[in-house]
Length: 228
Ligand SMILES: Nc1ncnc2c1ncn2[C@@H]1O[C@H](COP(=O)(O)OP(=O)(O)OP(=O)(O)O)[C@@H](O)[C@H]1O
Ligand SMILES: [Mg+2]
Image (cartoon, rainbow, N blue to C red; front, side, top):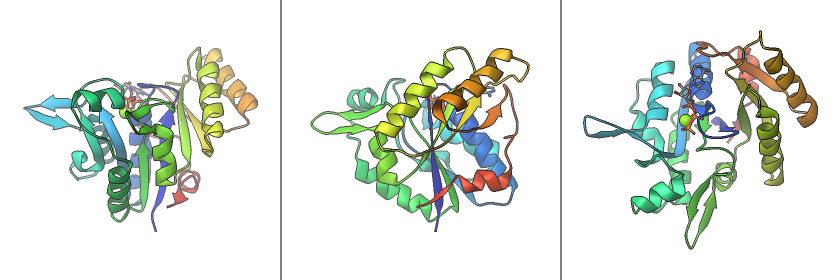
């Protein structure tokens, strides 16, 4: 039986990949067979004419997982725009069942899988005759979420909106991680306190700029993963 968790964020570029890399590294360093999956990546890098799923590569490099990163992303799209638009530009039809089947194959390879979302919690995946939103993927894969949020000014608004939307969508939130956190900043310390108070959800870890390790006990980290 595998276990999984879904990493979402208050927006794109907030640090899902960075935090996922630290989480995956922490698990691997503790001898756990940990892996990664992302359903749709847009804005892929092209290196030597080869398309690269940069997010997966970053995580695999950090955690020293010697597998082909592109094999762990169901759809790798070039345009650095929302998945629904990147897919439309490339004439690709994004299928929830393809993601589900791919994820199930990956499940058999790893004990703990950290799944990275695309963008923030509200992210259109497909908007043609069929409507698929990111939350449909979370539910289809049967996962609960961790929200990565910035430690900076504005994060109270972004984080609470994200929490409320996830709840409204019936998605269970296991915790919040504040990224680019500076313990010397009274603003960052206050943001942590206010987010916990207004959401009732624990800020389980704070990740500093350039952090090389996740500051969380391994038992606690493992307890966040749900059997899938
Ligand atoms: N704590 C940190 N310290 C240093 N650099 C960071 C940190 N968090 C994020 N970054 C950098 O900020 C950029 C955006 O972060 P990241 O790629 O993790 O965001 P993301 O939420 O995964 O974005 P996307 O929506 O494109 O998947 C990257 O260049 C990343 O390396
Ligand atoms: Mg990313």
